[in-house]
Image 1 (tube, rainbow over the protein chains, first blue to last red):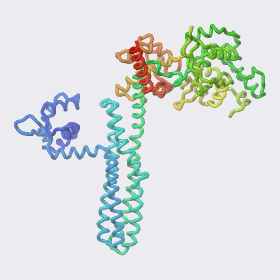
Image 2: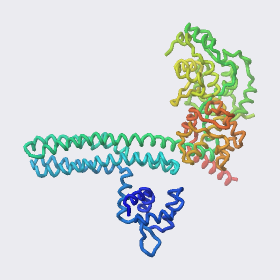
Image 3: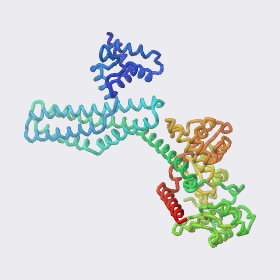
Length: 405
Length: 199
């Protein structure tokens, strides 16, 4: 058997092997294996031949000589599990566990210093070295795993639904990024590294005369400094990969959830359940030539001179020559009846009668208030403001429900 | 705060054009060329002037401008909101990234999902755009208000950044909470039962 070809086959069909090893059952029928080969590679024209090749190189073997079931041999299973473990980020809980171990060993080293036990000190130094190596390995493996997962996610967007991609990224965010940030920035990692640095300094003083401990402590100190620097860098690289995608997917999920919720409410309750005007107010003035730059200049001139004349209150109606000076009560009732319900009747009057002077609009408003045949809601205590020109009308909000004809 | 003399001395060049567009509901974005750039450069001046005329000028964090002023006409906004909700729902179901694609995709009107599924068609009909001409009418209104642009009579179109005003309004447009509605419906049902009993 050519080992290179064997390894190449394993690499080519890693996804298949992972599925066979990590599935619920360790034994798989020929049909099931062939189906997996087809689904993993649409271009594969002869899945049966692939199964034959894998069998030839001992990558899959028959469970027994008689049956039709296949399995991955144990030695290859453990390789697959190890590789797959390195591809996936481990949760921050594992890091917290390593830091707990480190804390325990630091306390043990402190006791060795107090007892002046060089033998125990050397033993603990060895264990400290191992734990530091484990922490460094945790951070670098997680960095590689996260970068790899994000690259796969970005490269294969079509193969996973949006919900699946969001689940993967938010899992990375919630299980690794956020808790690790907490551990590295504020938590026990900072404390234990500081405590260890103090312990090493004390150890160098106490075991100064020992032939090997001082040198080992110096090397340990260098490893700790390297760990402190590298773990932060590994974390930052991971965070830079995950956080933008997490923010984007979270935003998209919120947008989708909002749209679905609104459609649901719209379906069940219709437009009456919505306040489009309040949430998304959009003006729709239709008067032509309403705006004049020269009038704005004149307005600014008047403000500068503090003119007190009534015309100095710049108002849209001052720009446009009023076409009407009065309106009939009946005409207002008729228009209001057609438009009801009207949420803010003063605002409605100003919009309906843009050519009318404010005095006449306000007169019509007071007539509506006094008219008992117009059903209204007065929101006492809830004042609303309507601005016309430089004038701000602050008034009790009045909603007209209907006009009794 | 700018003095009236300072304002008078140097009124923005596109004051009138900006007012004409935004008073008709248009959201001004980079698609509006010089008007947009002038608003960006001299926002404070525009804001002071328009505010004094009763038109609060808003600059959205995504870089577009509009007047925040109510109009009694909300049917147009209702139709636009329903149109956008359907599109977002469809993008999400297709596994596509909404925030990535909404501004970068050239949508083809003939391929829109609004009239293609029974569920979406029901929403569209309720919002009174359940046919192709009416759907195109909604697109025309969206173009007029600055939510999208099209080079070819709305055969295809791109959304503009103001579309996020609709997207990000989210559930704030819902005026009645589900609990209130459920409570009201239950009360009405009980009342109807009581009246039936009395009869």
